[in-house]
Image 1 (tube, rainbow, N blue to C red):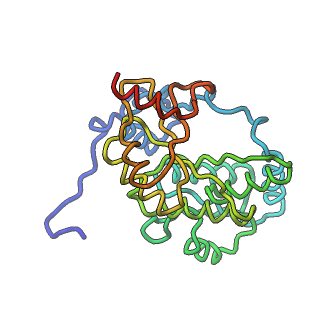
Image 2 (cartoon, one colour):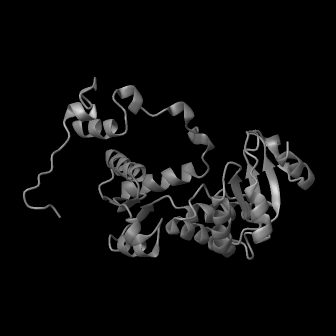
Image 3 (cartoon, one colour):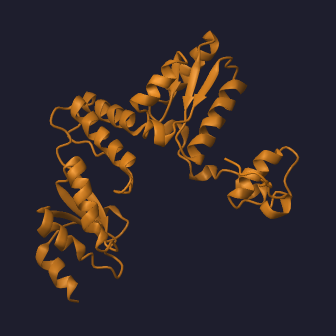
Length: 276
């Protein structure tokens, strides 16, 4: 709440770098957003398309675009759900704007508040979205992605599925809750899954590594450790304490960025390297 006598002052163009050589087509609002992220010229704001995957490599893209095309043609109510952070909120706004430019007449959006809804497409958020009565829901959610990937692999008769849960801090309860959700999701598709849960630790991790391993093990039942970045000066000695305290085996060592650089763990060779 603003205190009596106080005044909020907006930063000037000179302070934010918004007065740079921007084309007239870039609105002042976008200039301010770009400048806040360190972009002062249009080249810094343009996406690097060369780094994006070509559309034909994205499975399910044709079905998804056909679904949206049908929804737009039918005048269906489309709700776009973004993530809580600035990038997710921006992507949500771009999605809404893009659908409207394509002719969608009924487009709404929802950006979850982590303090209220938790992380991802949580039950609390679903209840709020239901009030909007959407015909089509556009969202990105790790649990949904996990379910779709495992289901597709099962249908194709795959012997194994590797799910990368992305890096997350063990101190963030919402991220840990999402991880637990992914484990439950896997079990719904394949009873007993996941059959192996590997915790990937950076060799530069210090004493904090034990706390990380303990938290992840309590949350999802870690079954083994992968120690990476051993191609540098770090030795990753904390895994010795982890293995001893939590009884977790060290399964693999990462000594580079190539496929052949992931090695089976050799206890004798590793102990010898600690004293080199």
